[in-house]
Length: 340
Image: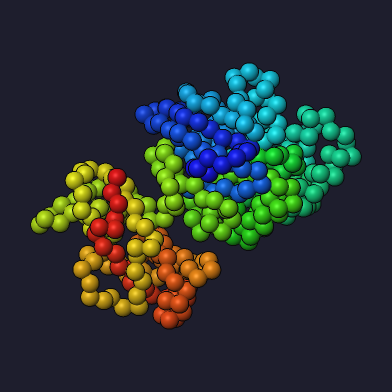
């Protein structure tokens, strides 16, 4: 959370980490027990670096990390003790060149758990990720999706207080995405585990999370970052636009030059079945690809050369008789486009 509220399980203050000309800079951020957090942002924005720092795999250049209100020092014994309360699954998990069951039980053996408990917990973890029967399968015989699920099983078998998942759905086939989503919810609900995951899928982040955090250029951005694009400023005949792709351009008004980011608030994008007369310079034709209903608001994902998200009322959505696959026009003003 961006605002200060009592008793966070994990928090950071004035954190900075610089490398290769990039700086991650977060003045304040906190996470609370039993909540699910979705961290979204473009590639290279700092999501994975932030997870690695929170999980104590990396150290920041400056700033403080707090666990249950107490600052985490550089003392290795303290860091190790806290790290044992956490688990992290990388986007491409590294597995030992051994069997699935040996990979999953390794952490429990290091923690000196008894053999009966180890086998029981490992079997349950495999069941949860839909890999029962894979116990003796060799790691090098697994598909990318199976490797990802073994990585998740290896983490949840430890029953961590905080679970970090870096792009957990990237390598998962569509048939098992629902399995992992359900698993995340169940772990959170049944074990009260704090879960922090990164995702490029904004619909998924909103669907799974208690709170969605957005990170752009190493900084936390308030609100969501639907409709965030990058391109070059172009000018002709007193008009300015950002060329997103060879076939997609967004009209803007800015004094900036060169390569920029643009952000279009979802609530500023008007949807219509047909183009209509208005002063808005941006009119795009697309197809509805995703629909999420949130009380009286509908979040509509449209493919108009890139994925755009619009927020409209449920009444408007029903009145236009919209559904997945419907052709749609997206209209928004130049002044709605934030350039930075």
